[in-house]
Length: 220
Image (tube, rainbow, N blue to C red; front, side, top):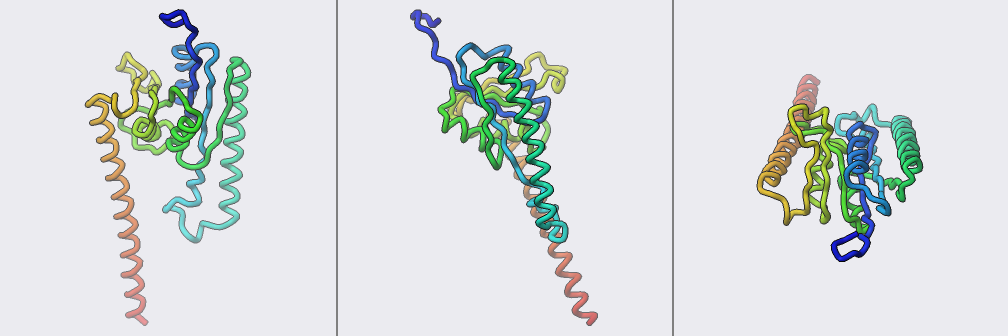
């Protein structure tokens, strides 16, 4: 009940999920600390077919059969994931559902939250220092940058043995403190450096191929 004696309106909550323990921890933290009866819970998972489109995959290795195998593998993994979370919803008798999106996980979470009029977003986090582009890595940074509703970023306690707090609560851009903004800028800078290194590496490979081609022409 609110201070005026009126019942509080149930919240629409979006939670990012994947097959990691960080997603499990974020969900459990929400259930233990935030959830209340009546809340609608949307468990969002995104499907990315990166393997066959990644720059590291050569033209020779990229083929329809390889692509089909990778897609089938991803679909099987997603099917197992959905089954697991649907069981959780049923066991806990939640008013909830799983939502599947394709593409970048961070974008998918924000998209669903916006379309469904969510009041809160909950995501896990692998912790500071990692540059892994996974659901619980850079995704939390993306969500913090683009969400227009409060965001809970849950850090697994085992990943931060020296910290007493295992979660951060952030609101949209107007409410972020200076320290958090500086950290976001630092992460973005690291991402830009990493991207630049990848581009430079690709250019080196192309240049080497051109040199070898010219050398072969001269030999002929």
